[in-house]
Amino acid sequence: MEAEKKKTPKAIIVGGSIAGLSCAHALISTGWEVTVIEKSISPPSGSPTGAGLSLEPQAREVINRWLGDPSILHDITLPLTIELHQAVDKEKKTSRLLLRDDNFTYRCAHWTDLHSVIYKALMPDTVLWGHRFLSLCISNDKASVVVKLEVLQTNEIKEVVADLLVAADGSLSMIRHNFIPDHKLRYSGYSAWRGVFDFEEDERSDVILGIKKAYPELGNCLYFDYANGNHCVLFELRKKRLNWIWYFDAPEPNREGSSVTQKVSNDMINAMHKEANKIWNPELAMLMKETKEPFINVIYDSDPPPQLCWDNVVLVGDAGHPTTPHASRSTNMSILDAEVLGLCIKKWGPENLAKALQEFQAVRHPVVSEQVLCSRRMGLLKQGLPISDDDKVFDPCTADTDDCWVIQHRNIPFYECVPTSI
Image 1 (tube, rainbow, N blue to C red):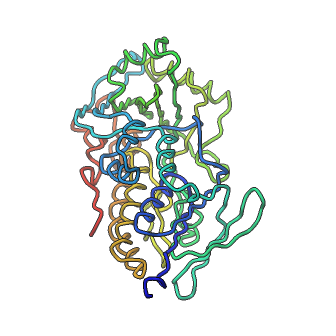
Image 2 (cartoon, rainbow, N blue to C red):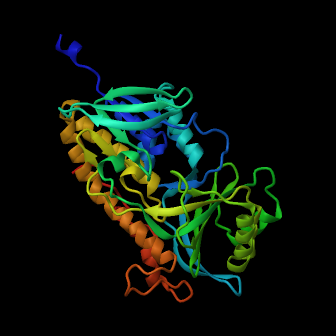
Image 3 (cartoon, one colour):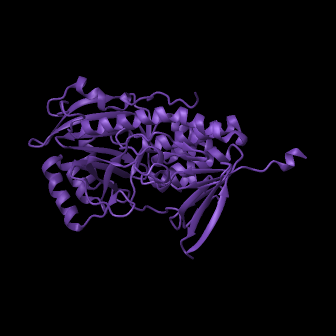
């Protein structure tokens, strides 16, 4: 009789990106009923403008448990067994090796491919597409939270009640703003051109033959090229695609709306091509020129917030710890957030949700804080920007191996293993 009265706890997750879907898997595995709210009308499909990411071994283990079949993740990723840093001479168009790690253990994926396999492993009705979060209200007894939503196709306003609200609504999180309105994003001092070059239909083009000759380890290597005030990341993705990211020092642009992706004009793209010819080797510059629909990401992070949870509301992913991309943290931190949240709730049970969230915060806050600040330092160094007023800047032209250890992935806190319990 007692078992019949026990209701299934319910969670609302705001945000249907990888962080939100990851939390859905983690909570469903502990017996919770989960609904994900996402303002996009439908899941991403085909090959929309997107970008590559890299996954650490621990995050891959977690994803494989959710998917139930390790071959699914394996088949959408390529190995990154080498991390290679090199300085580029702008005048001579030559490269000088700075650092090489032949024991790198990451795998890379296209964002859309990873999102797709995580999404398809959920029940079809888990995500409410085309629903926009409006507001929240925590009950007086702290036992529930009311979430107000708008159905975008009909403009209908709905209210849903849950035991737990998970904020996975990104770096510009409305839910984070609700609790810490003075918490601001910090512009890094630089932005990034990004592009994915698809060569599936012409593997013998001059572009591909040239880039494979200049970067012979493509297919299992994460390349970093450095020129003063600029650095570039290059690696290969499944389905014959090359992912490149060019970070360049720039004043903060005017941000439109709730996106950190900047609209670009043909004039901006043409100017980028000309600048690439001045800075990078000819093969990389040609790859950039031949890439369709390149775009700009404006790079932000924030100081770690003072906390990650309030009553029965918890922040995860970029909502909880906006970060720069240099330590490959954003997706990896989101997956580990979900893993730890699920473990804490499983340990304490829904009847002790407050203790579960307190433990989640105790486990994750120190880790994500260190990793966000490490990524910030790495980005400033790679761009030749000072970390503080009296700091010497990183100069790729004169740097030696001792100068470079701080910019490699092995310098990331908790590189070998991220703690999942106290």
